[in-house]
Image (tube, rainbow, N blue to C red; front, side):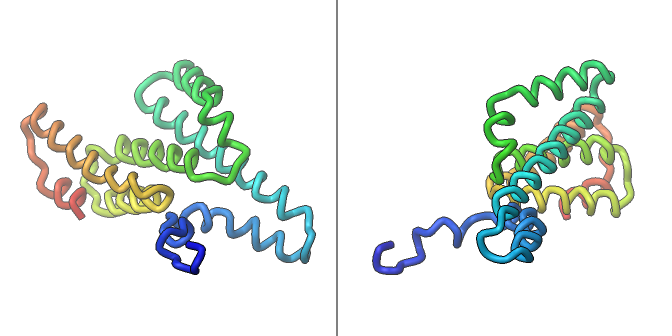
Length: 168
């Protein structure tokens, strides 16, 4: 690294989603010139907005499987965890990856019994965006395929169109 070798530099292999999400804040801050206070404040505002989006996605997932009260209690419990409190004000991928995972689960719950390929394509886009926050989230796709296989074993009905949409 001291000799200029870029093989060990993290920026070259970092997933790009956080940089893409922070682009509006950086673009607005650059309008103010050097030594601008917006360089410090705007990324924190973007992080707060992303944190609220994560809370919304957690609520939606919980709302899909429980009633409003339990979904709200679960969201408040998530908001009081160390992960959320520690990373909510910072521009880091940890909380955003949790949000994209919740969004993927919510979209899967919504389209599980639907056959429209357009909705399954949207589901694939959500998984692709999730994998751009952290590369281990590439395993979300195989996890949902496994969930579909388990559902097939439980129900004993095979929907070929849904299976093709999930694979692609």
